[in-house]
Length: 130
Image (cartoon, rainbow, N blue to C red):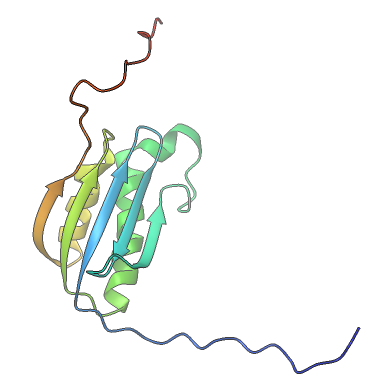
């Protein structure tokens, strides 16, 4: 092994972003909360799985609350004060995440549901029989 100079870590620069966007992607199985700046660069993110929930518990509204709380805390550490919220998906975590974001003291500019709806596109899967 050759001895070289020791590895140096890049120092994290404390960013000061006042305004950003929060994307809440909620499915039946999980909720993903992503915080971005206005250009779309990811600043922070959190999921229900990271918070320690496993299996079907990841799809609950409570798990989404905790994930949104984590993402908001990281956003506030960067100096964010105003957000636009974009929700997507059929899961139960959307409303819970929006409620938490409002309660964290971030000023909400707009809430928009960007769930994609097919205009009679692909043929759906066969009906589920239980």
